[in-house]
Amino acid sequence: MGRRLVPLTLDNLPDLPKRCRSCVFWELDPVSGEAAVKAGRPELEKEAWISAVLLEWGSCGRVVYVDEVPVGYVLYAPPAYVPRSTAFPTSPVAADAAQLMTAWIMPGYQGQGLGRVMVQTVAKDLLRRGFKAIEAFGDARWKEPACVLPADHLLAVGFKTVRPHPAYPRLRLELRSTLSWKEDVEMALDRLLGAVQKEPALRPL
Image: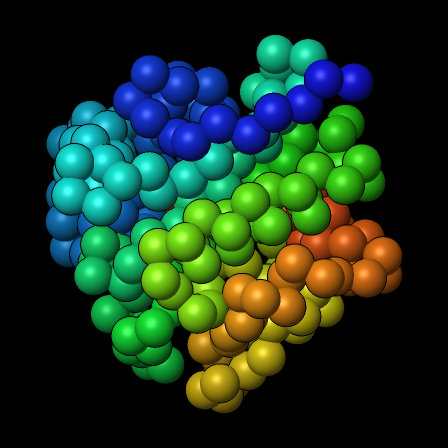
C-alpha cells in the first residue's frame, strides 16, 4: 500500500470531500460564515482563506493519499487565523499552541495507522515551526459528526483538558508526546478520525 501525506495547497484542495470544501465553520466568524452560506459562496471563501494562510504562514493542512487516492485530511493553524475560535466560551487558544480545526479519514481506510501518521506529521511540522502543543475545542455533548471534534475522543488520544466547560472544553496535546505514542493511543486516534465528519455539515449559526 503506497501512502503519502502532502501539504494542503490550492492545487490539491479539490481532493477534499466536496462537503468539506464548502464548510467555513472555522474559517469565518459566525456572522461572516452565515453571510457566506446565504450568498452561496462558501467554497470561494474557503479557497480565499487557505490562500491567505498559505501566503502568510504556510501550509495549514495535510492530505493523505493511499495508492494516489485521497482518503483523509487534517486542518490546523495558529488561532489568529481561526476566527471562529474566539466565539467559544473557553477561548483563547494558548499562545504556544496551534489549533487543530478538524480531521477526517475515509471509513474504508480507518484502522490502518493513517491517523497516527497524520498527527505525527502535523506534530513534526509544528515543532519545526516553534509550537509546543496543539489545542482543540471539544464538544462534550457530541452526538453526531460535525465540525467540532468530540471531547471524549480527544481525551482518548492523549489530549488533556486545560479549561473545562460543560459543552465546549478546551483541550491540549503536547506535541513531543505524539512522537512516542503507544499502540492503544494509535487505535484510539484512528477511531477519532473515523468518527469525525462522516456527514459533516455547517452547524446552525
